[in-house]
Image (tube, rainbow, N blue to C red):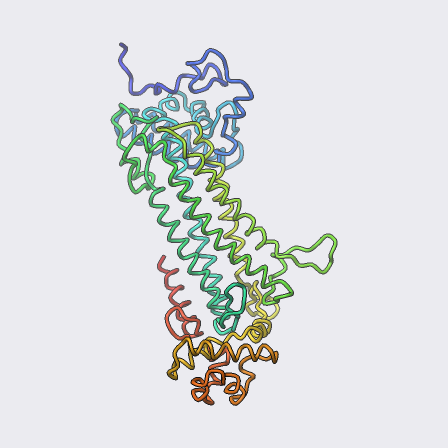
Length: 498
């Protein structure tokens, strides 16, 4: 048996310089792949977005090979020089992506070999495309998560500014889409800060499991070369290596987890979108959106449609679909790598693109600008406070406050609930709100529960006002304006420390 030369190309990378169209594995086959199969199996026109990650991974691998004496220092220098040229060609848009070379990895390897000769052929020593692609996709996703975390912060900053501006603005709080109790618009917005705070935690936690190095697992069983995986992990900024070679090349949990976190984030933004759409309807009229986030109608000249929130609501289904696609992709795969896994990239890429684009536009839409004429800050979500207050007068929003008032005077809550219900029924018949009752009228309407009547005193009027209701909820997490401002201040501190 001939001695294996560690500086020669690895076994799964034959010399293809004689035939530019030959595959990296074509020596095993007696006929070329058909054009139809070539097109069906190729991934280069969607996975070429991982070119930068592929270059970074290959350089780290080459440095490890040289450090371990598996390739020479001149080979390393040639590889680094060739990769620098390829990086520049890609940046200038001059790199030619070839369908015959199947994917981003072989396209770059083929070009490298053309530039530096045998050193390019030696690069693939000790690795497989299986662990190479698993590494590239983790590097790419890690970069995407970092972008998403930054954009969540921008969205949250915009929400905090708008919430602070409206920390005192009364808004009907709804349950079952019925007026329930007064809150402030600022408090309502802070609910979305809390949702996206959890989203940021999920993405940061997902990043920990993304940031593990598969390279060194080779095709599935590891390699016979004396590689140093920890060195490569350090070069590429991975926290640790994947500890089982079979799992390393076949695992796509990290991609599924990312899509799950994305689906939750988009669900939260979809809920906000639904509210913006409802609030902007003339039948509600709580807000208006800046014109640049809306479109008109081709037939109805009066229309101003909230297209951005509507599309976010629609794109949520798209992200949910990607999550289901990846779960379905993986559910029947035996160990280790299978060609099915080529189908992981398009839903993953599309999910990341959708999340990034949505966060960018949402941060802008919830944000503000300085008006050049007045010099004042103008918010893109323009609140109609009078309409919000008017809606509060239509739903007996302070009824619970009246019940709480009676409880504090000693009436059991169930009795207080019944007494206030009598008052609400009477107010509904008369077409008035609870604060419009005089003290004597209120006592008369509660006469059906005699124990409640003597408990009603002149101070009940302050309880029935919207401002009184808001101020009374003065606890952590409550809607009192002072507590809303406290929550905003703490949220800003969290963002700064992230």
